[in-house]
Image 1 (cartoon, rainbow, N blue to C red):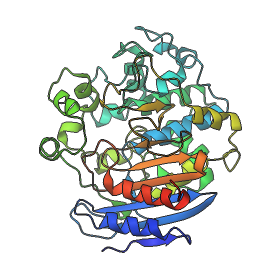
Image 2: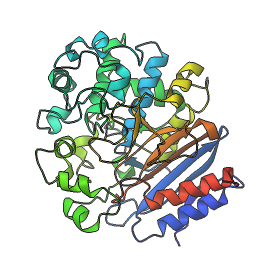
Image 3: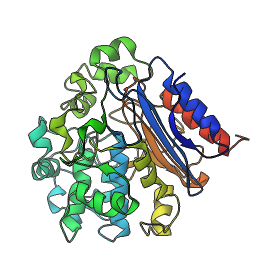
Length: 398
């Protein structure tokens, strides 16, 4: 069995054992996990291979592409913007971004937009690297488009667009006009000393990057685990909402296509953050209790804990075809996916097995990241065995 490096606090040895067992699975490659509990970093572990071909070793300072864990980090950055008074969740998007108020989107609030209810998941524009790096272009496209569904009726994963809308909200109101990546660095990760990037600087040593072993669409057809078959079949139909939202441009090219140098300096707030489990857990730990290095008010944390009101037609995600509770750029536990035992939790999962969240009810913050992408919709067993071990330690009675 692979023995992970790092440390656990006394009493948390079962988490180390579970992580070692996770790394020993035949579907594992490399991974890292970091957990805060009651204000302490009690788990900080890493292990396995750092390269897609199985070579190299995951190191203390390894960084990895975080995929949709990025969405939660963008949601946290927007929460900091709310705390700083740049905008409010109940404010109309049009008050910040007037061009958005067209084609039936006039009444959309910032909370609805960040909670996936505005219907701008599938964009009327073929995406490529240059277009995705052009915030002005993407903002114009999103502002001018007709919604994919009546806003407020449904929620759906804004697979790529969440990052651009978060960026536009921030830069429109920020006195310095900062982008999402710069605001995140200045106001979230910087004060916490968390090494996490939205747009990887040229001076970061690329040899530190754990490389992604992905999968292609054929793998999804032949080896699918828990991804709904209704979603898989929809991805075969170019006119479907999932095809237009997810396969623009990556899905059919394979989930590892984003792990290339040409993408690393692009600020993709929905899918492109690069960092470590330790850095991600530190960000969520700052949201477990008010105050702290970010000076977060109780009222903001109460709002994140309560979550955004659900869409009129329920929690079934219109893009992913699974039950989700989307809220302010984050996800909350739901009947279909109770990723934490406390309803106070909020975080984000990513394609392939990574997961990060804050659990204020249990005074915990959790991050698990991996470079071997699985084929599970949620609750990837490589990650879940580690999470379950942690909760058994802090909640021995269940």
